[in-house]
Image (cartoon, rainbow, N blue to C red; front, side):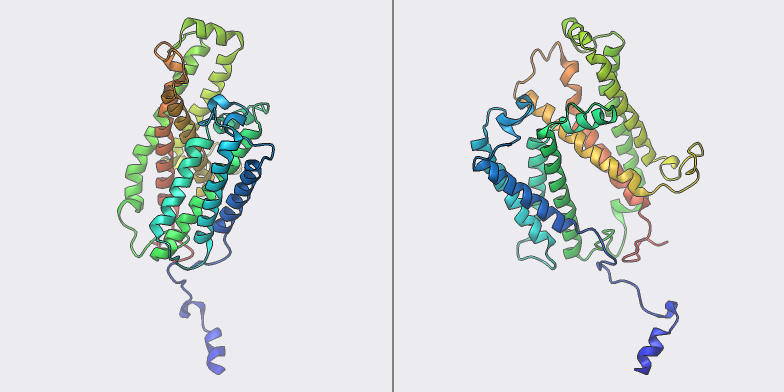
Amino acid sequence: MSRTIQKAHRPRAERDESPRPGATVGRRFPFGWAAFLALLCYGLANLYWALGGSGFPFGANDANPEYSAFEHVGRAQLAPWVAGGFLVSAAVALLLALPGRRRVPTGVLLGATALAAAAVLGTLADFRILGNLAYVFMLQFSAINWTVVNQVFAVVAVGLMVVSAVGYQRRVTGACTRCGRTESEAGWTSPAEAARWGRKAVYTAVVVPLVYASTRWAWAIGYPLGISQKMWDDGKKDHLWMYGAALATMGALGSLLTLGLVQRWGEVFPRWIPFLRGRRVPPALAVVPASLVSVMVTSAGIMYIRLHFQGAFDDVRHNWGATVPETIWPVWGIALAAATLAYYFRRRGACKNCGRGAH
């Protein structure tokens, strides 16, 4: 008893209170259980639709079926497959959420997670999520419909699943569950290396959206770059080119903000920002929105590539400016994701969980 009391009153510096590598300290958001519940609920919703319930949002029932990967597939044929996919994903998410290591090989669980994310981003989700976000900022809410709401929910569900898979992979490999570091922080994840390849990714993420924006700006000022005169005249009657230029400008401004991932003002608020000047920029303030945008533009670009292969666009040779620039959006999205990851590696600092990263 006396030894216990003496140990409790020893100075903090003399006690061995350093967390174990890989241990989780403090309360953290349960991504694994959130992913399981979201996927299970959405799988059951699709099962309801498969059994004849009303409100199925995809395929031929899509509000805009011409954008869907399953344009001519009805609820009776598509809903059972979507339900099965989400219910299987929920089972995988449950295995990822449970403590300890599963008997199922880690590669199988991670592969199933990647497959689920690719299926949602490549088939169910499309450019309307990105477009609706832009319209929200423009206070134009009429474009939001039931299909877009379901797309967002599906993307969020598999996004939580991916985060859970990353945490599981860290746990079974002995890495810190909070920061992902192992005994040595070397190679491509080190701050020095991340600064090197991250800069290249940032410049790529800046250039690609400007290529797209240049066509929309040209149309707004009266030059039909990449489209026929007839198409430009038709769009002018409905003021489409002004809306297009506004959306392109938002994308261009976002691409310029990407420079903050490698500039000083992306780490410390500049002097011209009242109340915040000189303060440290929280890494999450850049990482979270940049990660979301990278997912949305990648999904949008995949949709345009898919529609080109499906032959959905007429007279591409004379109207290439309307749809071809969007096909390079996956390059933008992947580059932005890489730039964001590099920024995170540079800014994450010492981990409060494992103590690694302290200099």
